[in-house]
Image (tube, rainbow, N blue to C red; front, side, top):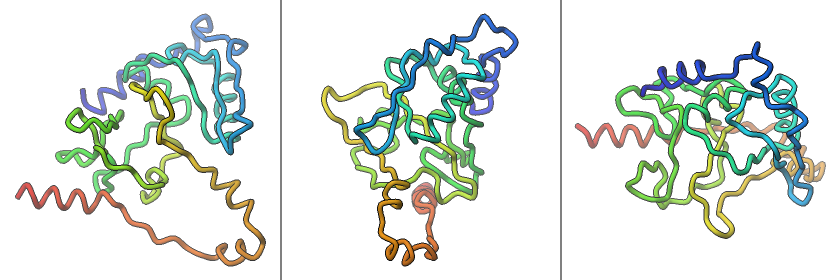
Length: 205
């Protein structure tokens, strides 16, 4: 299934706003901030397979803006349901073919809508055993994505190595002198996938 047909199917399966009886009732959903952490909130009671009302969608967007990370536990989604749920937060991120990102296809230059990420080498992974350094997704693109959605399929029994950083609180905690020193700085960045794509293209020649 191509990215275009994936999106078309997701739109077809998306909530029908005029069918009120299909909505999950907002009263079933509770958002609990992770007060012992620098960021994050857990969303209880929401079934991501069900249609959500405009009231619930607004509540989720406001919670994401406030807490930066939302955690939805015990979900069971296929790719199309995952895409449909993603559209509550905005349109699907699709960079141009001249701006390669993780999993960009060699023939089209664009990534699939759902990208498998795994450390099980040889099973459709795009990261392998390599540990990713701290980063912001798509920050080198002309129009970076607003957010990223991760759907965990296989989890470790304990712990986990994925971390998020609240850079807003980190900046607010700086003293005035440090803020004044860095406020006028500009970042020069680069697209790490351009080099990978060129290396792959050269290997194919």
